Amino acid sequence: MLLRTVLLLTLMAQVLMLENGLLRTPPMGWLAWERFRCNIDCDEDPNNCISEKLFMEMADRLAQDGWRDLGYVYLNIDDCWIGGRDVQGFLVPDSKRFPHGIDFLADYAHSLGLKLGIYADIGNLTCMGYPGTTLDKIEQDAQTFADWEVDMLKLDGCFSTSQERAEGYPKMAAALNATGRPIAFSCSWPAYEGGLPPRVDYELLTNTCNFWRNYDDIQDSWKSVLSILDWFVSHQNILQPVAGPGHWNDPDMLLIGNFGLSFEQAQAQMALWTILAAPLFMSNDLRTISPQNMDILQNPLMIKINQDPLGIQGRRIVKEKSDIEVYKRPLSRQATALVFFSRRTDMPYHYHSSLSRFNYSGSRLYEVQNVFTGETISGLQNNTNFTVIINPSGVVMWYLYPTKNLEISKLMSQE
Ligand SMILES: *[C@@H]1O[C@H](CO)[C@@H](O)[C@H](O)[C@H]1NC(C)=O
Ligand SMILES: *[C@@H]1O[C@H](CO)[C@@H](O)[C@H](O)[C@H]1NC(C)=O
Ligand SMILES: *[C@@H]1O[C@H](CO)[C@@H](O)[C@H](O)[C@H]1NC(C)=O
Ligand SMILES: *[C@@H]1O[C@H](CO)[C@@H](O)[C@H](O)[C@H]1NC(C)=O
Ligand SMILES: *[C@@H]1O[C@H](CO)[C@@H](O)[C@H](O)[C@H]1NC(C)=O
Image 1 (cartoon, helix red, strand yellow):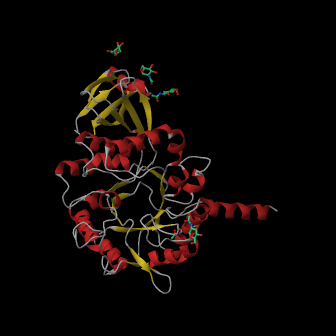
Image 2 (image 1 turned 135 degrees about the vertical axis):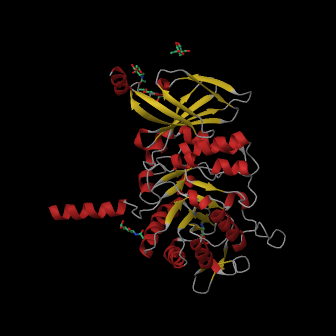
Image 3 (image 1 turned 90 degrees about the vertical axis):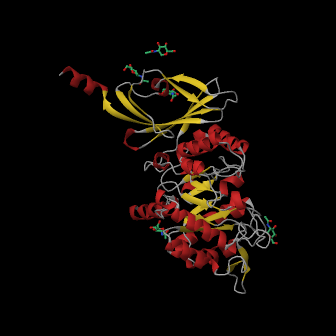
């Protein structure tokens, strides 16, 4: 009886764990979709169509322009790469746009120290109408991706039923595991179920996927960023606890470097996504991105905060009547990150506050670093009043850590 119980528990534990060991911190890289969509017209637009040329050029930029060394290592293909299935049912890429095959692109990425991600869909068709990975094709396609030495799979959910998704996502997780190749698994599953319990079982999700899209696709506008942020904040009591090493909420790609965001809004998306412990997938043109946008995306302290090993997702902790909001993320070694975010539309706002308002313990002195400007404030106490000036639709972001214990410093000054 005892043996049976132990066996049963062991089995359950195996079923309940996604133990591929991957993505202990949120994934970082580049994903084609938001910027390049399903542009397949290589005659009209050879430099921007979904093709191996586009991915090789982005790979070169990732490797040569500092991205890879900061952690942006995933080079991810999205929809519109598929040419069809061969006579044996194997997926094949479009032969005109990917003449050397996906295995060639994976080799190319690996030769530059990058990883390659690919896209499939659990329904009859992908969202743009290419062949889907129906339930009967899951094992075959997982094996194909492993044979190509792909490192990540995004599995979309267009043209599928809720029942097919409930069966298909766990089946794909098992099929990827059975290939023996570590392949990070990105699931669009919850986004197709409204993103919330009871239709979404977040415990099951953390045991099935490395990260997941909870909500709508991002579009190249500030309105879209705000609608995603609003949804994540209004459901933070559900979403915040389910994130952690190996399993992340995904509010979707970074728009920075495209057309829809002002400078302030670009900084705000970066800061807020970092507080949310979000995957940092840029979807932009790395061949033409401005130095100013590169600075936002390549801020080493920002990336250190996003990649904090504790992997705790942050929360909105204060919403002022003045339309200032404060977000806080706990970090390792007692550090924290604070984002002061202005939803105002008038002028730079002088926000007066103190750390005690954000529940910082009074017994410590804090060293504060402004994440964007690098300015520091030393010896900030919980009851010290401070003012931050926040631009409309902008942020001020702080990295704080306790320098010394106030009691100790008092004792020492008495000596
Ligand atoms: C497959 O799952 C087992 C058990 O959870 C785990 O130990 C192993 O590392 C996994 N392998 C891959 C390739 O994901
Ligand atoms: C998928 O295709 C099958 C067979 O043609 C069809 O019966 C089913 O309704 C389709 N499912 C969806 C969700 O479109
Ligand atoms: C501070 O802590 C109290 C008591 O735990 C809590 O009710 C309040 O929401 C917290 N405030 C912030 C800003 O975290
Ligand atoms: C702030 O510090 C004071 C005095 O050091 C202390 O009494 C108080 O509890 C602290 N407030 C918070 C929120 O930690
Ligand atoms: C901080 O600001 C509050 C509210 O404006 C005020 O009551 C308090 O006296 C100030 N504290 C200090 C130490 O200046």
